[in-house]
Length: 176
Image (cartoon, rainbow, N blue to C red; front, side, top):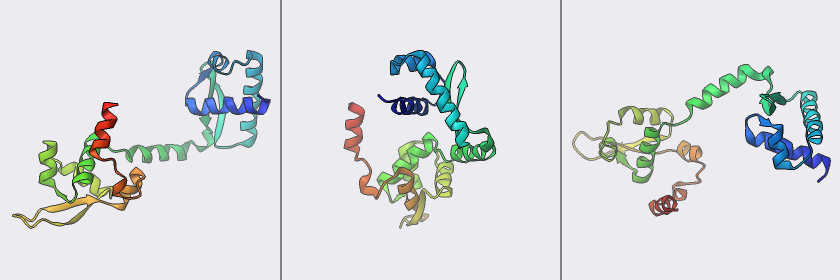
């Protein structure tokens, strides 16, 4: 393996790890001598500093780690706060799955399947535009029908609803 490939390998290990990697771990995995590892890590740290990019390699906790450039901390904090709020709770995912597989469906049917009140979760899913009101059921009280949206497909990376796994697929996956 050429020196450039060795450095690329070390870079890939650090990227994949997401945490500090001890020199001994790098040595075990790469089977490179310690002095060569240190030389490549110094070169990588220097290259990242010179590029002044959004990512740096730093010595942390007796190892090496890829870190974000502290210069961008204010924006990264805003991004992290935004992306954390984009995650769905277990109850939201459960409700969304029920709606996706049973649509159009009314809230009473969702609550019957979940055995809990779903007002808050349905409101959250509506606010996030993952579900929409599809009309009203011809029944007493004329309850609202709910279904999924284009944003739902985007969130889960689906071309259309036919790409959702079938219940048999899910059962096979759980059995494996």
